[in-house]
Image (tube, rainbow, N blue to C red; front, top):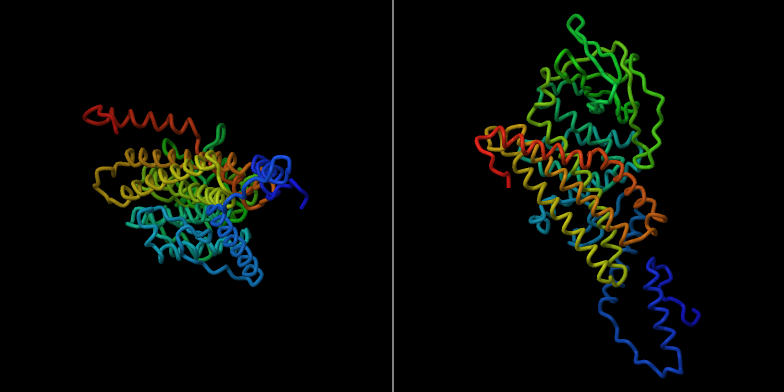
Length: 439
């Protein structure tokens, strides 16, 4: 190595390279006299140990991947091999069995390798085992969704609507519509100038019109679709193989979630089965909690990005800014974890509980989603500022996860969502016996 060369040429931080280079140059300059040798830094010893652990993990992962099996999981707090996402922080250190199951789920997603068919097969398997919301294990459900998000957002984005559809069918008492081999989507978006209408015909219904934002429509077998009937919104189950359903020619151009195209569908005299009563879908007890499941996926992806930042900080001696970034990320994720725990307790409280009214549930879920969105955007910002362009430019997994999450987060309507939330707070006060503030 030439005199004065940086000892860490791979560092993305030019100030680190400059400091090391200057120190070596001074040390070698005889005109300044011999400088005292610096004492070994115990922090650097820990860094070297962390680097060795990370290198060993990557080597193990590569060998295991070649053998077609996931790497063995170790359950040591702080180990980079921990893949599952626990939302109950207080129980994290003692939840070995729970974490082992989440790690298995994480590995199951990785084994799909982004293949849509394999992901849909996993969705059908999870539909049998994943707990339903509001049945006493809502936090466990959200932890599984968060783990899906941490593993890969493509898989999470495909699996979540299938699980949501099964929960809706269960709540409607129409589980039998989900036959063996079925995969489901939920198409409930409304577009300006677009309308899907339903008209009765004999003992059934027919759908006609357009529906926007129908994700994975060409890969799924069935979907739950909202349509207008007279003065109400009705939910219907449809077979997506019906020849009367055609897709719009508008192509999916997104850099995020490129394997999860969302396109418009046109319905032409399509037979449909009603699910629940008119307006039931929007006013059912579980409507708000479906949005919390999506937020769990956002949180899982943000957690994975935060773990990458944590690994980055372990790989070098962090300065004050890096430590501030890491602390900011921890505070954001901790706040989101607390929000999930509080919301799950309300979801599982059961009928007749104080917060059982759908309007109050919606307020709680809005608080949760806003907290998660804020935390995720904080993590994205801190990771970008802390690590710079290197992982975005040279790490395909990290770069894709960032692009996926940035697109997925836009399901939330940002300031408009918070404005709706503020209006709901005032409306709940007007409906109550007093105008007491909700905090």
